[in-house]
Amino acid sequence: MTPIYETELTGAGMWSKVVGRGKQLRFTDLEGGANVSLQLYNALERSERYNMPDTLKGQQVFYLTEGVCLHSDMGRILASVTQDSVGWHDTVCGVSDETDVFQKHGEKSYQEAKNDWHRNGRDCFLIELAKWGLGEESLLPNVNLFSKVIPDAEGNLSYISKASPAGSSVTLRLEMDCLVVLNTCEHPLNPAVSYQERPVKLEVFAGEADGVPADDPCRISHPENGRAFINTEDYHKLRF
Image (cartoon, rainbow, N blue to C red; front, side):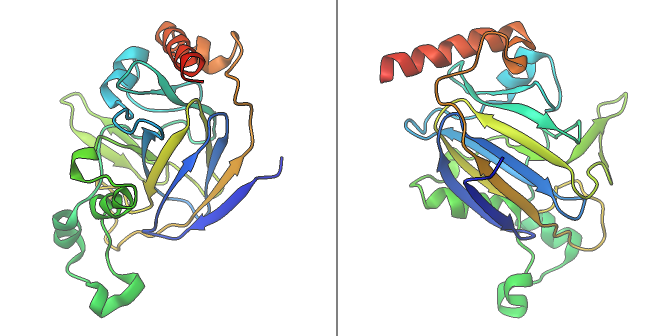
């Protein structure tokens, strides 16, 4: 299948576009060890956003993988994970901020380093959100694709290095028209001493915009997904 859009996201890069319902976004970790921090919003009503608590409790999961859906705060499905070679994508750790990066790597400003300066995930999100008239009030718990974080018996979280080898990929099918906002800054728990910049290929594929069949694997993976798909379909029927 030939993509209708393709770009390479450089290390510590950022990107945002409106992507239509039914299209598929495939992310490929080109060198291994990448991180893609992702946020989703209803493109037409941006007060509706990805909701981490509903996504996790509704499907009784802690991480994303194939068959899992990303729920909105309105009881609808924003996207489904239709393919995944990694098996674990972090949902709870958020993104780095300026203080995190400074404490870990020291100061490296744009004036000194130009495009090799130490960006952080929070500022990258805010830059992209501003392009769409959104600000700090629109920041929310995000997904970190390609990053694996596991808890111990006391609930302490540990970052698992090399969880995503070179060539790993994950595909999201959009179930609504979405504003997709992302950056490729390093994961906030990545213990690497040097600042991690890993490129990611992003491809967008055409798809069906008429919803998914009753036996779709993501739809039937959990009862809550089935109910949320019905809500999503009703939304589109009544809106258009």
